[in-house]
Amino acid sequence: MKTIRITNNDNVAVVIEGELRGHKVALTDIKAGEKVIKYGYPIGVASEDIPQGAHVHSHNLHTALDASSAYEYHPDVPAVVPHESRTFMGYERADGKVGIRNELWILPTVGCVSKTAELIAEKANARYSFSLKSGCSGVYAFPHPYGCSQLGEDHSNTQKLLLSLMQNPNAGAVLILGLGCENNRIETLQPLLEKIDYDTERVAFLECQGVEDEIEAAMAIIDRQMALLNADVRTPQPSSKLVFGMKCGGSDGFSGLTANPLVGRLTDLVVEEGGSSVLTEVPEMFGAEQVLLNRCVNEDIYNQAVGMLTGFKDYYTENHQPCYENPSPGNKDGGITTLEEKSLGCVCKSGRLPVVGVLGYAEPVKVKGLSLMTGPGNDLVASTALAAAGAQMVLFTTGRGTPFGCPVPTVKISTNSQLAQKKAGWIDFDAGELLTGKDLDGLSEELYAYLLALASGDVTAKNEQNNYRQIAIFKTGVTL
Image 1 (cartoon, rainbow, N blue to C red):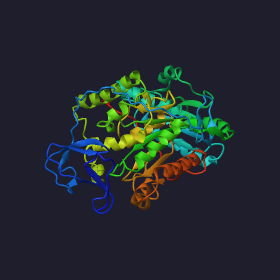
Image 2: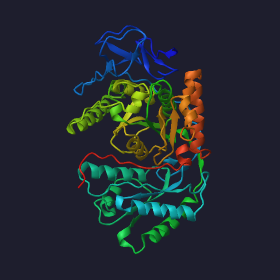
Image 3: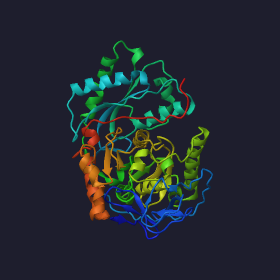
Image 4: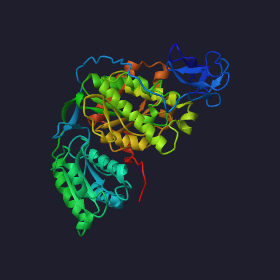
């Protein structure tokens, strides 16, 4: 049986071929109550005696996590060694951000006009021609069911998400489409709009109840916006303008060996070149959070990160749910047993450099470098929030495969080559080559070259080719 031992401290190894591919086997006898070590850290406790060579999974391993666990700051902050920026061709915006696409986005304020938004986008896409290299690259509507009958934090989350998406630099123009009688009507957004930086020439508003024919009224607005978009051209831009969003979904036993470390290397590279990356999925930090906390650049950022973590635990307990109801059935099928194991693999995406910022849900990036953002593990909700944070693309690692995409290019990076071959219509890049002799540094350079070509409009992500684009909004409370 061919296996990989990740660190010298591990007492389990990962099987890389055969029926148990991605699962763990014991390297030594492990007594009941002893810690099981993977990635050099405990991933749980043996629930029975495990003999050397035995399969280690849900039948003999359980989590050791406790919601009451306290945190301490033991700073271990690595230095950032600046590197010269690389170059891509992008669209510079009035606020200094740079888009890698030049799209017109239609954002409904309420679910009641979501279908209207889609019809408007269909009509616009039939009327105009598009190019990835210059001018407008497409018109897209992002339907959702919210914006009315919401209270408190839910209502606020819907507003924050839509307003932050409006500022993503991939949106060269935005049409905010309202109904007129909803809680989240356009006039209630105006005070919030006054607090943010956006291009008033390129953002338009339309209340459907206030016009006779909302489709034609929208098309008249889009005609004006299209004239601006079609005058836009790509110009050389430094990689310091890039913002990577990081997400994993449908993880397997190889996620922490291949795709996630590969994305971690990309994170380090872009940060060293002056750019930014954002890590979310707070519940999938549980069990590995101390790794991130010790990398917080100072005690203030550490305290903000602790507040994010404990706030998410409170969210679970206030809803009478266990904090550690994870991994998913698909994760377990792929060889992941406990949340500690999943989280230790998940945080590999963050690389090794300092945590310099902590963001609220859907809050735009504030400082260059690696930031943590409040958000759930749900693929659609978390990826949408990353786009709202300003990510021009999301690096999405997966061991099981998924077709979906959020508003920005959602680059699917497979943890194993079998998935890349089986679902070639979903997967953009194969990190499974790391299991067959490819070097991490070499493969990271290949991935970076692909991402710069993607940013320049030379290639498209599979979600773009398949027109898989959607948003999902974080919901925590009641619906009226």
